Length: 207
Image (cartoon, rainbow, N blue to C red; front, top):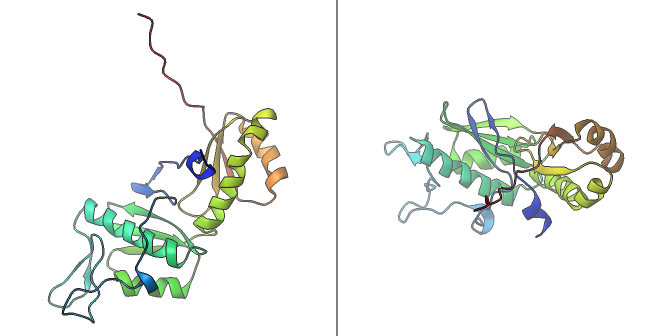
């Protein structure tokens, strides 16, 4: 099992947001990153995923339900993770507000690409201190050291790059010891140590 597969993505829910993991699989975008266009309308971008357009104006409108919102989020994740891997952190769904929240390091170029491709009807931008690529590299380092930490009395049960770009969350039963010792090995890497019990393995009952 490789390091990426060993990393556990945290299925968190914050204030009604449904989190989409930053390591979700994404299909490659077309060459150059341009959206496909419908036949006969070369100047009108085709709305990806769940996004729709107002037939009277051609402007993008907000998704009409959770499925369309999820499709829009997936399309955004695909675009940004491929075109802006050093800036993109992750996305979350604000179902109550019918919006996709995009976490990225501030970039006028990235923001312009989002507006051009998806409009602004259902997108809310949030600044992130780190990109998904940066956090995933740190998470792989920690994951590769699981055996090392076990030998030093720190059992690590989960490692996850947070979708909002703030930190790599490391789950362990030895929070205080991990908070003291992990920075000695990883320096100023943005780590967040959380209490996490190891998974309980079910065993068949006798008889």
